[in-house]
Structures are given as C-alpha cells and as structure tokens.
Length: 353
Ligand code: M6R
Image (cartoon, rainbow, N blue to C red):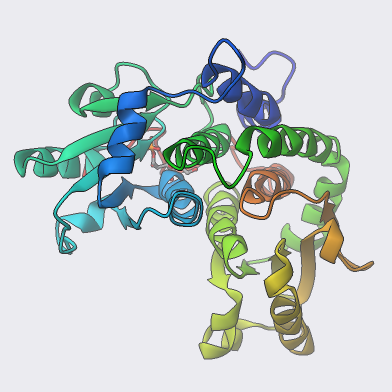
C-alpha cells in the first residue's frame, strides 16, 4: 500500500536508504560481517569473464556493476542488452558466467538468452527482486535484491538495490580487500536520506528547467555517464520529455547541434578526475544558449551548482546521484499532469520479446 504517499514512485524513492540498509543486514553473518552464499562468490571468482544480461534500468545497473567487478574484483565483465544478445553474440571465453539482472525476474528478452546459454551448457546466476520468478527458477543460482515489492512502472529502488547487491558481491569476490564496502554503503545510505529531504528544491528546479521543455540532455563522464543513462530513462518514461544521456565528451561529435536557446542540459559531476573536462563541456553548451543545471559532489562543487551531494565514495556515487534525478523526473511528470505510476505504453514487466 502506498499509505500517505501520493504515488508509489515517491514511496519507492524514499524507501531507498532503508533498502540499502536492509540489503546490508540480509547479506551479513551473525557478527555483522559481509556474507553471501560462498558457492556463488566462488563461482564468480572462478569464471574467466562475467557476462551481464539485462534490459532498461537493470541494464543501467549492470553498467555500474561492470565497474565494480573490474575495479574492485579485477574480473573482466561485459554488459549486454538482452534483446541484442541473440543477434550479436560476443565471442565467449572458456569459462564464462552469465548474470541476469531483472527486477521482476520475468523479462522475456532475458529469458530468451537464459534458455540459449543453458543449452550451450554455461553457468547462470540471476539477480532479482522476486523470489520464485521465472529467471530465478531457471538459473543455477539466485541472489535476491530484498527491495520489497516495486509497484511503479518506473524502476527506482530496484536500481539502487541492484547496485548495492553488485557492490557487495564484487567486494566479496575480492575477499573484501581494497574497499570497506559496508562502511561506504552506510555512509551513502545516510547521504541518500538527506537528499530525500530536499524534495521542494527538486520540484522548483523541475518547474524552472523541465516542465516547458520538449527535450533535455543529461551529460557526464565515467560513472556519471552511466548514471546519466538511467537519469534520462527516468525523465523520458514518465514525463514524455525527450531526454538523452550522453558521454559529455561526445557532445561535440554531433549532439551539440541540437542545443538551442533554453535547451535544458543537466551535467553530473561526482568524480575529481573528470571535473574540469565536464565543466568545459558545460561552458560549451552554455555558450550556445543551453539552460544548464549541475549536480555535483561537494568536494568539487562550485557555488552556482544547483544540487550538491555530500562527499561519497566515487564508485558508489550513482546510489546518491540518482535520487535528485528520480525526483526531477517525478516532479516534471507531476507538474505536467502525467500518470506517474502508470506511464503510457509501458508495462511493469515485459513478458514478450
Ligand atoms: O524487471 P526487469 O528489471 O527485467 O525490467 C527491465 C526493464 O523493463 C525495466 O527496468 C524498465 O526499463 C523500467 N520501466 C525502467 O524504469
């Protein structure tokens, strides 16, 4: 039940800090140390490459997961859109492990790949929010997201749950050596809570920048780029504003031609090493009349940035940055009078290929 919340989407956005904490407790042993089924951890450790298969928001979580597996666990990882896999199957390594990320566990595009790779004799693991779902039943192993039921069509808490579970798995694969994930996750859960307290500001920004716009761009580099893909999916699917997420460096290779006076461009900057380059992209679009908004991390923020996020681990930053982006989408849709929880033409689980 959505209780006192006007929409499921708002309820689910606000549940996110609690979901991160719930996942930490679900994946702890009696002493509070990180724990997951050792068989699963061992299998990820033992494969020579991880192939992540997913669609939509789950695919975007997979892109973040790849960074965790490669940077934290040193495990080569490829992320593939499920519906493309059949046509463009990558050359597989000798000992691949297929990981399916799906909130519902029912997505037909993912199932088609699961059936195919099982026929080929490969090992499979499903990350899902729904116990007993098709993808969970048919894969060799399952990790649950523990996000609680997600009702709104626009996925919010499943995305942050997927990222959280992926970060824990990546840390365990590496014997928790380089990074204290639980400490970082606790910090970020607190930051997520403080971001949820700033709703009125996101509403004003949505009103000022988005409501009267036909289109919008999210730009960022590195982790922020992957975040931009998800942020733009959220905005377009519920407010119907045509929104694209771009690698900031790609702008001048084409997309900048679309910038007109007043086009909203939302730049995301959470990492020190990309700060200056993304800032210069902001100048480029501003010079062409764009209405720019910046979401930045405190340590590299500038006074004029509209949304500032307290410093968090850079790899985990999408867990925090997505919150203002989800609210911007929510309020843009609300102010335009759209059906937030049930956007047109979309279904919560997509059971046809
Ligand atoms: O249940 P799944 O995670 O497999 O669903 C995948 C996509 O259909 C889903 O994430 C979709 O993109 C959402 N509506 C995005 O908000």
